Length: 159
Image 1 (cartoon, rainbow, N blue to C red):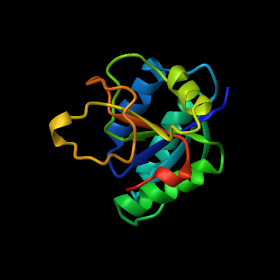
Image 2 (image 1 turned 135 degrees about the vertical axis):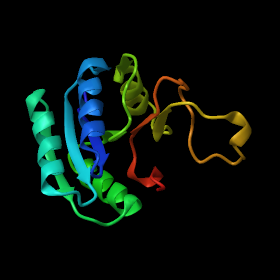
Image 3 (image 1 turned 90 degrees about the vertical axis):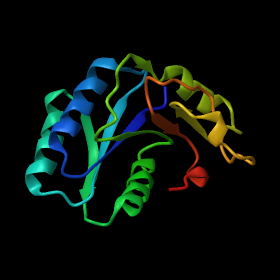
Image 4 (image 1 turned 180 degrees about the vertical axis):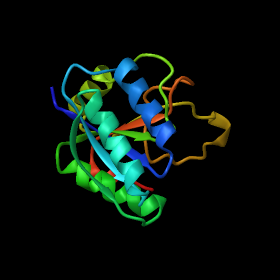
């Protein structure tokens, strides 16, 4: 199974980030390896250390990360590019994206790996009244329980 790199985007919200990490440990499932990339937007060293230590405390594999003040968009894009160097599958978490129920990434990873025309799986609620064609992505699953994206294909990011 292709490993998934979880990108955790954070900035100064240590308690939120640690809650997100704990929920992911408890509720996130995948038949392959999960690794982490921490994308911090220049928080104080204490926050960075607490987040990385929180990941290490749960036995997570932390591949790399950065802590540079550069704004949400650049931080996100740089993190995604860097995480993509470690594999084709990435799963996006922000420091306040706390899972509330079990989420199995396995079927979504298979969908991405088996369907060359599929570039992203969006997991979360989308109000259909807010959408205007043409859409540049495909909604594969909609669930009000989570709001995450699992991506495959560097050409489809648009932050």
